Image (cartoon, rainbow, N blue to C red; front, side, top):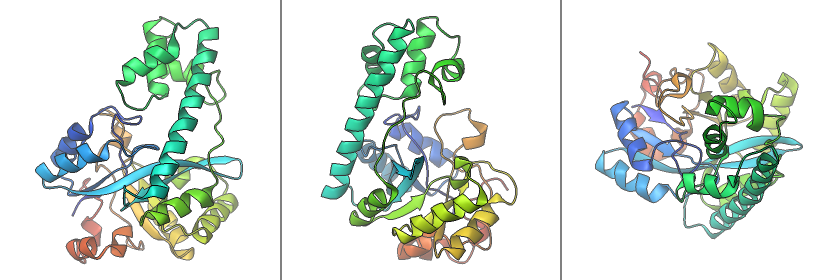
Length: 293
């Protein structure tokens, strides 16, 4: 069974519609998927319909922005009740925070010469969540840079004019919201925070103490041995292990749907918490999460 529990549609910062994303997942040989857009549930109804047509098992998901001390981290929520009042209130608050941040980004970019940035980014988003990729497209159109990548390097990346730091809710609050919605909280791509080993252990310990359920031990293509190391860290903290591509758009070879290594043999998969999936996966754990063979 092939599983990918982290991917994005154009309802956040992905490129494909939920329908196109499910079609691509099917073509990639996936059987169980989770749509985990940033701070929004809007794409899930379309994804559910498309997944049913393609005979995919869709796990309701989201990726929520949060902070651990002064460090921004992301937490994926899986197997959610999307009608949970606590979850819907949290998503609404996250959306308001994103709008306020986007207005600040637009204002800074306009001072540098771009025109009507927020309005045009909103039009490019087409009713979905406005994000930095839309601002990048505006900068390209105005001739301020030659490509989206250049826009991030010069204006939107870390430490640049369009890098507005957001005070997201504390880690424990986000974990509590996911649990209130009946979901499992998963610490997303822990290796990408570039923490020392001591700080990473502290983050994992605090995450577990807050009620977190799993660590994402596989996030797209990554160095050999990292997944097993993170699974060991998860086991030490009493946490399960999850996997996903963190797919955003076609052409990203490091984050293509399903294109990552097998779940390490020392991992306790997060789907073992869900009887219906544990039964489907059976004992062939080495085949799960793997389409590179």
